[in-house]
Amino acid sequence: MNKIENSFLNKDQFGDDFLWGVSTAAFQIEGAHDADGKGSSIWDVFTSQKGKIKNGHHALTACDFYNSYQNDIDLMKELNIPNFRFSISWTRIMPTGTDSVNQAGIDYYNKIIDSLLASGIEPWITLYHWDLPQSLETKGGWTNRESVSWFSDYVAICAQHFGDRVKNWMVINEPSVFTGAGYFLGIHAPGKKGITNYLKAMHHVTLATTAGAKKVRNLVPEANIGTTFSCTHIEPATQSAKDIEAAKRVDTLLNRTFIEPILGLGYPQADLPVLKKLNNYILEDDLNNLSFDFDFIGLQCYTREVVKSAMLIPYIGAELISAEKRNVISTDMGWEVYPPALYHVLKKFNEYKGIKKIIITENGAAFPDTLSNGKVYDIKRTHYIQDHLEQILKARNDGLNVEGYFVWSLTDNFEWAEGYNARFGLIHVDFETQQRTIKHSGLWFKDFLS
Ligand code: NOJ
Image (cartoon, rainbow, N blue to C red; front, side, top):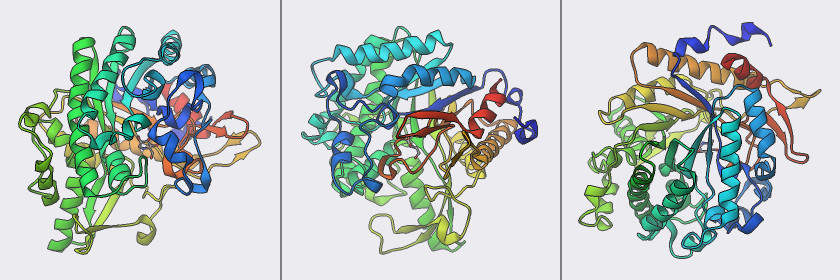
């Protein structure tokens, strides 16, 4: 490794207690879609439908983490990664979502947890990373108010089985993304559309976040409990009053709608009037059940968005100007590479009084990697990570609260509607052979963490 490429960054600058890790999600890595009694999830169904995923990709095998987890844990150890974030597949544990528990699913996660601990790697569980049981979707999924109790029961099973060894828990991953893409736009599972589905899902997911967190608190009193939110730095396209107002509405939708009720501030209805329709679904006692005193908040930031007013766009009256149109450097996701976004969102979320601790639970980039002579020279990803770490350092030097950084992701994996073409890993995966190759970024991270 060429030390010069390490820029001026040094792990010690972040302090001894700063948390370093990598993040993954069950559906994106595990494969083994029907192994050992696993039930079907909305993503199993969605990926089997024609035209939903780019190039017809599916996740029947994905990275085969279900079978090759030990190899990937060994690689993590080799890369000096001390914390591993992964999610539990609800249908491995409860194939139909409620009632019966599948012991083989419990055994599987026990093996992962035990193997991590034996390797000196701390497990961080995400309880819900988007793979709702299909049998619950047939009852309306998150649009059904009963989803709150289905979820709490599932959380209780996880807490009872894994809480003796797992300290770190995240309840829900990126609620605004999976409700927006899955229940409003229909481009993610379960493919539902429309404002009514979206608002119902939004409210029930928010209630479930709190209900799930309370369950973990009761059953694992010492747990370190968080939940994760996607966040994006928003800027108006011009300084016109119309664009500034439009940017404010987009900021409300993308950054505030889910976290503010959790922090006890209620839904930000004044700044996004369509949220007033939520009142149709809020029952009397709900306002007392929306907030929870989380030990940490996970923020996941990848880019910024530039917004202009577009009054013909329903509900939001705004449009995002793509990175391509702005002619700026972007990743394979079409997201602008703009490291200061991370500093800006940290500053913004630091303004909330109720957040005890902020951890960046995801950040990373998809670039077109090529494997040549057994090496992947993904220098753009290395720089992306270094540049974002510099922003974190700047934030810490300015006294802002940010106490950890998890790279998305350990290996290339199934990137939802984008399939396998968007590669985010520190480790390259050949999806034909399941061969792993540590990329330049992974070698740099290893060196940095040593
Ligand atoms: C957000 C999601 O949590 C994760 O599943 C996804 O793969 C990454 N960000 C990249 O899009």
